[in-house]
Image 1 (cartoon, helix red, strand yellow):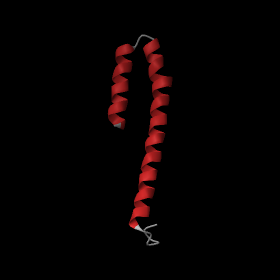
Image 2 (image 1 turned 90 degrees about the vertical axis):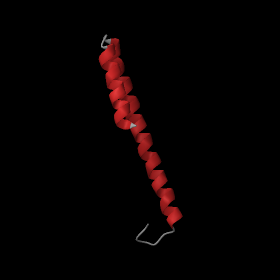
Image 3 (image 1 turned 90 degrees about the horizontal axis):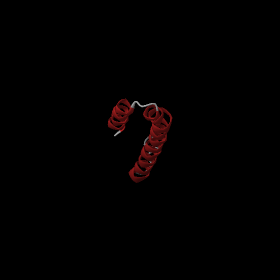
Image 4 (image 1 turned 180 degrees about the horizontal axis):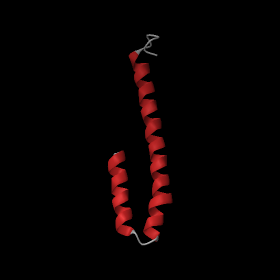
Length: 62
């Protein structure tokens, strides 16, 4: 778009759309990780390790 000399506001709208899409993908992956990995650890009595893992994931993502 930049090479085609499109209006800056159009480029910024597309950047915002890409950012939003990436955030949504990250959210889906994070939810899957929590549901399929961390909850299993909690159920198997590894509560402290699971909680530390949850904090690590959130710190890495946010």
